[in-house]
Length: 377
Image 1 (spheres, helix red, strand yellow):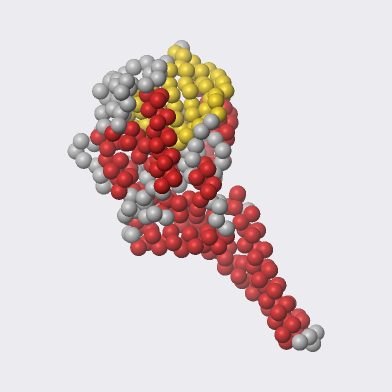
Image 2 (spheres, helix red, strand yellow):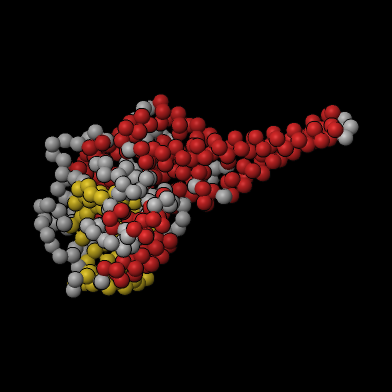
C-alpha cells in the first residue's frame, strides 16, 4: 500500500527476505519462521499454516494465514547471498588481524568512526567489540606462550643442560602454545563472534563503502526476481531487509524503481527494513551509490518504506532515519516511516530479562515472536 494508492485488502502477497551478513544456508530462516510464527499465532489468536516451497537460487515456503477473519496467502523467498559471505570468511587467523588493521584504518582516517560515535554508541561498541576481543586473544596467546617458553627454558637450564638446548626448547614450547591458543580461540568463535564480526565489518569497508562486483551481480538477480513478482497475480510485493540486508534492499529497489517493469503499475510495492545498520556503510567516502539510492527511495511515490528498530538492539542504529542521518534528505522526502519495536514494552519482563544481555539474539528479535505485541507484530 502506498500513499497514492490508499488502503487495499491484501489477499495474495509475495515476500522477499534479504538476510544480513550470514554464512548459513537459508533453511534456517524457514525453520525460524515455522517455530516463531506458530508461537506468535498462539499468542495473538490467529491461524498460520506453512507449506513447502521450491529450492533453487532462492529458497522459499508458502504461508496461509487467517487474521481477524481474513485469509492471506503468501509466498516467502529468501534471496541468497550466503555463498558470497562464506567466500569472504575463508580467511585464516592472520587474515583476520590484517582485516582488523585495514578496517580500523578506513573508519578512522575517513572520519566515519567519529560520525558514527556521535550518532549511536551501541552499534559503535558492537563494531569495536571484535577489535577488542581479537587484540585480547592475541595478547593472551603471546603472554602465555612467553611464560611457558621461559618456564621450560629455565627448567632445562636448571638441570644443567646446554644453554642452546634450553633456549630452543623454550622457544618451541612458546610458539606451540601461542599457535594452539590462537586456533582454540578461533574454534570457539561460534560463541564469541569476534572473527565473524570482523569479517562482516571488513567486507563492508574493504572498498571504502562501494559494493564489490560479485555483490552488484547478485543485485541484478534479486532485482529480476522482484520484477517478475510485480507482474504476477499478487496484490502486494513486500521486500524485507534485515541488518546488512537492509542496505542491499535499498540499492536493489532503487534500481527497480528506475526501470519499473511494464504491467506493474498500480501494484503495491513495500519495503520493511529491520535492525538496519545503514550508517555503517553510508558514512564511508565511496558509498556514493548507497547515498544516491537512499535519496531515490525516500522520494518515491511507488513504494511504502517502513523502518523498524529498537533501542534494546545494540547492533542497530535504533530510531535513526537512515536517509536523514546520511545527509541525503530533501523537502520532497516521503520515507521511511520510522518506529520502534520497543522490546521493553513488547516483551514481557521475564522474556526481556532472559534476552537483555544476549545481544546477537536481540538483533534477530524482529523475526521472532513477541509475547506482548503492540504496533510491530
